[in-house]
Length: 58
Image: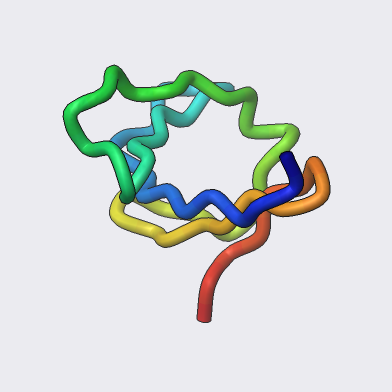
């Protein structure tokens, strides 16, 4: 339940970003409000979701 989930930012569209889960690229992208994501993301950024929080990977 509290496992890390890794995402790649596919695209940014205004106040939303579309994320692709790295472990399951065949799944539909996930739309997430940018307010929930780190400020300095861009397309192709790598994120990790853990403990109900998104963080940018190094």
